[in-house]
Length: 515
Ligand code: ZN
Image 1 (tube, rainbow, N blue to C red):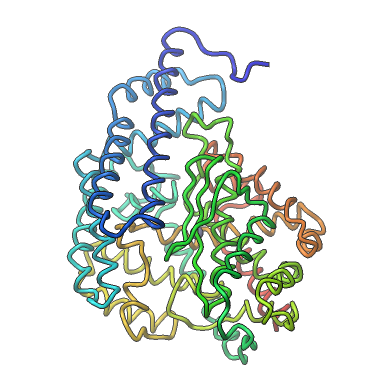
Image 2 (spheres, rainbow, N blue to C red):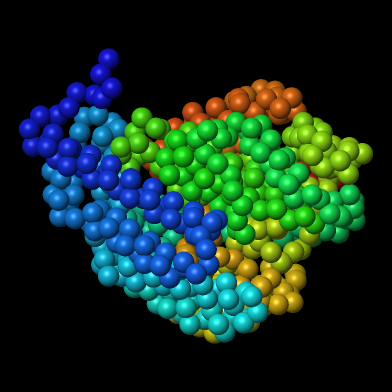
């Protein structure tokens, strides 16, 4: 059988050839850009920061120019008028058309300015965190906000209006880059509804005495922790011949290709859970990247459908699997082989300890109950910033006030408050909601996996995780960008973005299993 469906004739065939070549080159350039970014966070010497900024700006500029080119536009117009019969080709045209419209709407000079401002923002944020304070970061952040406003204004005219709906606002244009199709008008009530049951649930849980986690205090050998994280990767089925794990301050995943997926973790000698859960999280992202449709790697379809769907995969492995009792029945004996001071701890005690819920300051260390409140805090502030109703200089005070209102706790300093996340250092406004979207999809997908795979808990307890990995591969990862994120989830769960499954999951666990 031929590897590719029958090629169309004449001008359509030539147009497809043009797009095919462009998509291959764009993919290669995106891989180079990803590798530069990976290196920047892992092995790049500190003095290389300015030079790296220029390199990234050059690559991003080249990607933008190629994507926005008249040649690509011409070929797209031809194929939009005569859509390919092959469903994958038609989907590739649709998705490339979306990417092209977004790129063409934003001038190349603005793209390059953003890339440079990102490097400067990152550097200023690092210095600010090292003691100079928010004032050192504020000018770079103001510059990024200004550039993102310009970008949003440029994108608004090409932004779709799903289901009619009111006219989109600048924040929508940035939100759409992470979650295609999601709008403030739908997100705001969803988050309000979430807070309405989450805050009382948190009150109920924190009214109880916290579980004993005294065995997690002490010093845990860093090299032994590292070896345990590698064992976790193997347990999950992350292919270390098609990817690797390194260390970074802020763990992340970059997929250069299904055959080359880079993840990082972080080791704290006094926080033995940090490395384990960072690895579970990033390897969840990593499995998505490794199970993308490699046969379509020469098109834009060999990529995740949205940031939120990507996050659902990391959160599903971190929380629904990684914070369950069956998982620690298999993982704890392995962990104790590397860290013998844990050998007297029962899986039941460990399960309770890894599900300690508390009002804490730092999002990335937050438990699964409070986590979404951290996102609501950031979403509210970003929306005000983009709407011009909050000045950058007033951000620290606004942060502290919301932290007290939503989480019931006020940060003692900026490092645990307004300076804690790397996202604003990249000017990544509109990105945070994807984390909550991810938590919601994770709960819905795991509920569907439990229905589809009877005995899933028993399999997890025996360390047999391949069934779950393959189910996710088949139903989510291998779809690539052939469908939008919400359609992918709906096809599996029968419903779109909802907080119903997360609520059921958290209530079953915290008011049932852990009560
Ligand atoms: Zn993540």
